[in-house]
Length: 245
Image 1: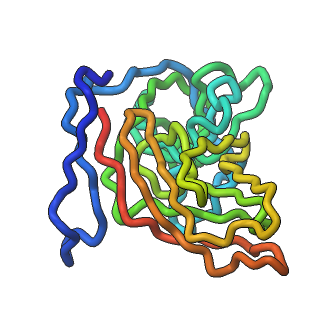
Image 2 (image 1 turned 135 degrees about the vertical axis):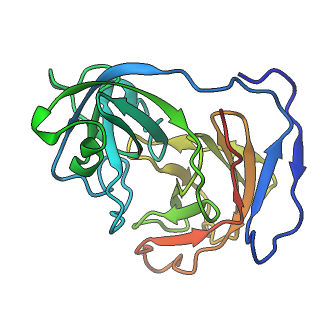
């Protein structure tokens, strides 16, 4: 919980050891995020893809699907959670939706087999767990992905490699106004422009996490064209969120 007004302090300029900006909030927070109780299973198809529309990351199988009762409007997509099971703990990234069925109740996590192995023998199949959202020590800045099919009149942005869960994404119009973009259940934020020539960028975006930290980033996509849809493109921003509770 934020106990004082939000102020921001930018760290020293980027160096060889710190190639991107981190913003430190001058706030007081709770020591840890709430702990939720549920159950865990595993699914063989876990590879980093899923309902959140992230790409599979070879070698990164520490992923999970979250119950449809928690999923909301892609609220947990990209969030990192620490899971505590009968025989250990593991940190996973939420990438998918565990669908509406009797086996996926509130606070249920469907883990990759490799993640499940960290908390219990795979032969157990289903185990009681507790879990909480955490801020992992990520390397590199946040990334912005432009969805395949985007064009100057219909733009779909996705935030990736974010330390904390995303609360909202705002877009600065060519007229200088900030507009909050609608988030889809497939984890993209949509900008539609009812204008003659569309918008080719650069695009200035303001990304806010669930703790109120905000990053303002300007990005450009080389695949945007007025004559064809983008095949999709991933670009690095310049900042990363500070750690939460």
